[in-house]
Length: 192
Image 1 (cartoon, rainbow, N blue to C red):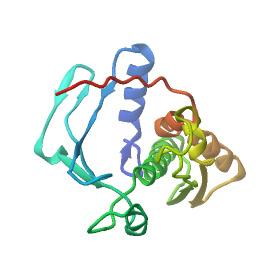
Image 2: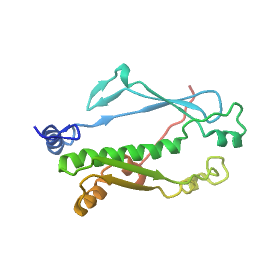
Image 3: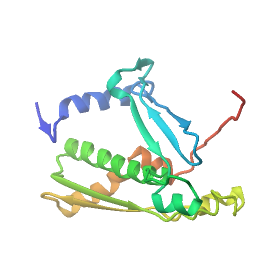
């Protein structure tokens, strides 16, 4: 058994083989639910149950809740009473990109034998609130977010070829793909 960074490489390769042989296996079905908390801009988002292929998985340890809102200074600008610090949704997207880049790099680096004893990722952008506040046309909303930039710093015995592979591994991140490519999104609004 070969273990790198707490991954049994043989088990990982068996999983990769099963995915390669059958495109209908290994699919994760995920969702999140937001509940308005009675104060503009604030919600509690719940993430938890999911399905692996057609097998639902719902256990108490997977009941995550995230309080969303804005930074205190932004809430003050919006005129919110009782302003407080909460994670802002764009910050969560940036955090998700960073976390998914770590996943993509570390899992594949373990598989490929690349020494990634340390990975630090910084993801940043600029948000223009005009779109959110109805001061720009809705079809210009993609211009309210500036270019998303990231830096990856890898510590370990890293060759130039390894660094080039790490650059490529970033592109395999599902969240990176979600925000860097046009993905179809559809929605529905109804009464309760």
